[in-house]
Image 1: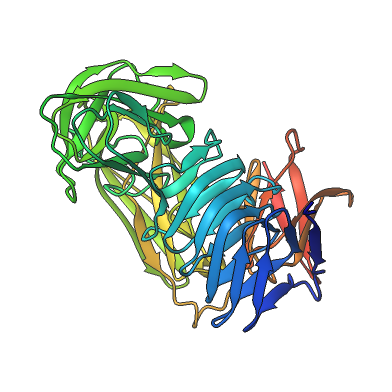
Image 2: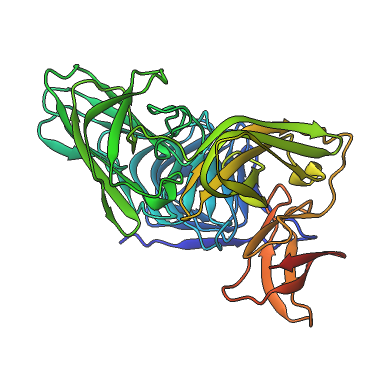
Length: 471
C-alpha cells in the first residue's frame, strides 16, 4: 500500500520581509497522495522543474520561470494578497482558499493560465491583468463564484458542440444547438468602458453592468439563440434599478452597441441577478437599462497635475435632483475609494462649475492615478462618470507614509510602508483596534471594525505613525 505524506516548509518572516523557497536548477516532485505546504512564497527559477501530481499549498506568491507541470492540486491559502506568475505552467486543479480580511483576499494573475480540470473558489477573488486570461477548456469546471468571490478580469470557458441549454458557469446560459464549439469569455469587475462595461447605451454616458460576455461559435446561428445572463451585485456598476433591463450587443472587437432582444425586468434576489432574452446576432453581449435622460448633464470632466497635487474640474449643463458628487480615486483603476464630496446644485438648467484638489498624489505609490465621479441624487440613486487619469512623477516626489481617504468613515489605505511590515491601528487611549500586513507594494488596507467610534486613531508601522480621523 502506498502512503501519502505532508511536507511542511515553514518560512518565518525576517526583518519584516516574507521568506521564499527557491528551486534553483533542481527537480522537485510532489507525488500523488503527498502534500508540499509552503508557509511563504515559492520561486521556480529557469532550468528548474517542479512536478506536482499531489498537492502544493502555499501562503505566499508562486513565480515560475522554469518548468511547472502541475496536473495535481495547487492551493493558495494566504492571509494577504497573493500573486501567481505561471510562466508556461500547466495546472490541473486550482484552489483559492484565502484566509485574509477584506482587501487582502485577492490572487493576482499577471499572465495567461489554463486550468485543465477544475477551478475552485473557496474564499477570495482572482484578478487577471487586463491582458491576461484564465482559460477553462472543455471538461474543466468552475465552482464557488458568488458576491465578493469571483474572477475579476478575463475568464474564458470553452465547450464542445452539443444540443440544448448549457450553463457555462460564469453567468452565461445559452442553447448551443447547431452552434458547434462555443467559447465565451467574460470580462468583469474592471470598471473600464467598453472593456468590462458598455458605454453610450442609447444615451451619451449611459453604461451597462460591469460584465461583458464575448461569444464565439464554430457555426453562426441560423435562428435566435435563447440566452440568460447572470451577475452579482458587485458588478451593478451603480445601476439602482433593473425594472427596465435591456440586452445590448456589439460585434467582436467593436464598441458599437445596439439593443438586442426584448426588454423587461431582471430577476433580482438578494445579491444575484438574472435576465433572459433571445438574439440572432452574437459577439459581445451585456446588459443595461433603456435609453433615458440622465439626471445630470456632464459636459466636461478633467483631471490635471497641479504641482504635487491633482486638480479635478467638472461642469454640468443641467441638473435634476442632484444631491452631491463623491470624488473617487484609485491606484490601479479597479478599486476606488472616496476622497471627497462636493455638494450638487439640486435642480438647475444653468451651467455649474465644480473642482476638488487631491493633495500630494505621490502617496498612491503609482505612476498613474485614476479618478471618477459618483453622482448621487436626492433619492440616493447614483451613476458614475468616465474615468480620468493623472501621471505622477515619483522620481521627483518621493512618497512617504500616507493615508487616504483621511478623514474616513470605515476604511482607508496606508501607502509607503515596508513590504510585509505589520501595520497596527490604536484608538485615542491606546487600545489595539486592528492589525494587518503591508503587501508587496507597501500598501495596507485598513478596514475598521463595525461600530467603531468616531474620533482620532493612530496608525503605526515600524517606528512611524500617522493620525487617522474617523467621522
